[in-house]
Image 1 (cartoon, helix red, strand yellow):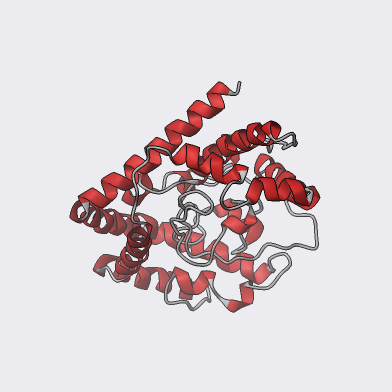
Image 2: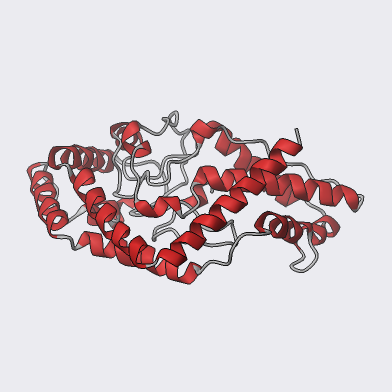
Length: 294
């Protein structure tokens, strides 16, 4: 997902843009800049290494990119069969794609805090090029071609998705969405997490900042406007990252989620088996389509 990939709520498991997006929480959705932005750093190890049990059942940005590339090729072939053109989007480089949990606990990367404060970092180059190509294609698509692609019953997009989903089991996305939200909220109430929030908050007070927890910091209304981050915002975000490291907040919080989500997976074995099977089946189909097009 481009800059719009960054939600200010828990990421949802939705089939409308492929079965869901990457979990992305605590996001301040600030994107526009009037000045040229600084170079976009690659995701750091601290962001790439974050994982939770539900990741096995949800589609990451990398998974979504794979599915969308296969979909694009199928739409191209379908449109050719109807005597119309469809230009597939340029691929995104794997290393440019967002890790699924990059901002799960707020800002955790020192370089991102230094450059962007609490603002969401712009897309990396190949992801940005793909997003720009998508916007350009949509803006210049004639009405006849638009109907051929997006018609809900017989459009090429619907046909492409049906083919990729063929053989995948039906899944209870409403339940999964509910569990994503419930387990995250439960983790925030975990005894060790609450204790760590207090330690983090004390660390922030020593820096002259008063926040109860990382959610309060990242959603501070002072950081929500358009334009580049202020020096005050950058200072707060850098202090936030330092305090997270000092208190081991990320490891404590992720351990709580590991336990809580693991218990939920074990309590709903059939539902999660179906989620995993659906994800695997669609990913396999997408890889086969891309391999066959080379």
